[in-house]
Length: 387
Ligand SMILES: *Cc1c(COP(=O)(O)O)cnc(C)c1O
Image (cartoon, rainbow, N blue to C red):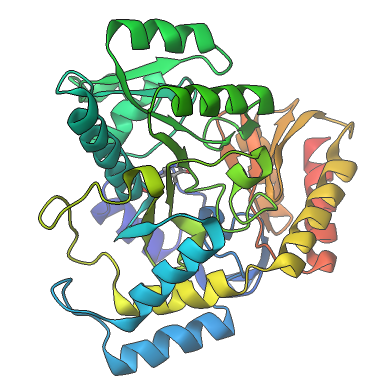
């Protein structure tokens, strides 16, 4: 154990089961530990560093803004947030953006927007937000209540009321809830990330979208993990051919600094008035300048590269020894292994490759531009570790 590991264990709240690696530097998809050992990064800070660690253009954009005005309050206008919101809307067809600092906050905003829209339109009894079993939407009390996995709930009762969970695919359950207490919003991840990297069935996503449109229910898509090129499209919902009313995103949008964005479509674009919602740091100019650099480079060529890398991983791992299933979309991949996932990940660390887990799966979230050579090495090491 290094001195820093000991210090961390003494003074940092024990919420994380960290791997025994102390990182001191990183460039692109290569990270260096305190002993000078290099690792291939197959996690990108949990889908955050889309262009790898310390991407040059991102550093330049952030530092240039730090030299101009690093922070002000939301009582004044600044350029980076306005331009980032414009680009987000132009590339999605959404109408307005609220900036926060995390995925959970983006989802909080989505939930508040849906609740306010529905309460205004259908009355105060219309507050129930329907989400899916096995979903993950964040750690705040409301987003925890939205999350459809019991083990996250156990220690934090009572949860925020007004959330109901249905099984993916179960349209009858949705209709039954709607008949009892009118539904104020539907919140889904197109690929359940923390749930084990499980894509929803396209037919179900379409049915939800049709139901929401027919009943004037805001459809919210949580693109915190799937978004910003990760799925092989700019946002995963685009692959599913739907048009959500609200999109929340975070992780990869910031390129390594905290950001959350809640995109409001035509239906809900005017739901908020001054004072309804806010954030001190949300839309921070330095963070938004970095995000603008990231988003403007998620283009067709990059997305094609994501899909090619994805295909390579699927081809290599599907049917490999010790691999039971490979699921996911783009560079968001879950691997069901014969050995326990954590054991495989630890074996990968020994081989100089950093992977993640999601439930009982090994999870891969490499940088969107990971060099093929590094990807080949990492996949070869992972295959060995699975055997
Ligand atoms: C990570 C994640 C969140 C929470 O994001 P934070 O930035 O940790 O608050 C919410 N939804 C999904 C789908 C996520 O993957």
